[in-house]
Image 1 (tube, rainbow, N blue to C red):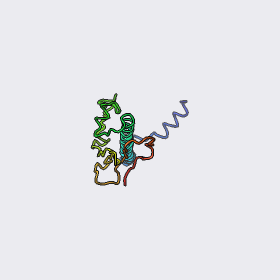
Image 2 (image 1 turned 45 degrees about the horizontal axis):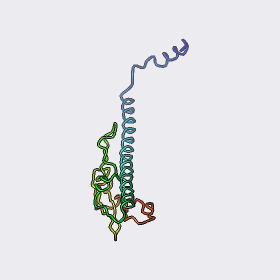
Image 3 (image 1 turned 45 degrees about the vertical axis):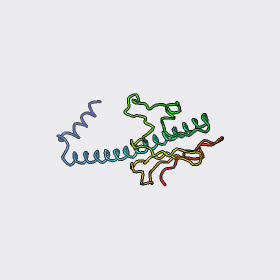
Image 4 (image 1 turned 90 degrees about the vertical axis):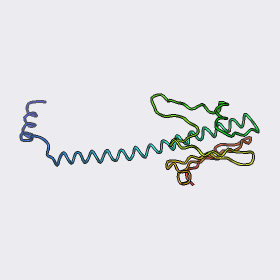
Length: 165
């Protein structure tokens, strides 16, 4: 800075000793409002991430079931352990690097057990997550994937994921 601009700065702030209480309070209020808005957005995003993770896991289970049935025609699956022990699903990851996330094919992202109805020769099955409210009886946010006994030429995309009713 040159001397002229320093002198102008000194003249402007010559009698100012600090900030007044209303100025400090206004600054704190603005920061509080900004922080609370950010917290609400973060919480909303956490649920969206959990929904995406649950859907991804459910589709992995569905695809593993279809692959198992293609390789083992005529056999039915009665538990997830059948898919894990036969290497159609990888065993759960106990510790992902630098995270606290775990993979457990029996539970959704809210640590609630899936409701599993395995397909039979005569009926479709389903895999249901209770969703963010963790209540399977309220169907508004439940996530459902249809599981079907493998038929030749089945298209898994024919039965998309359904969220809610």
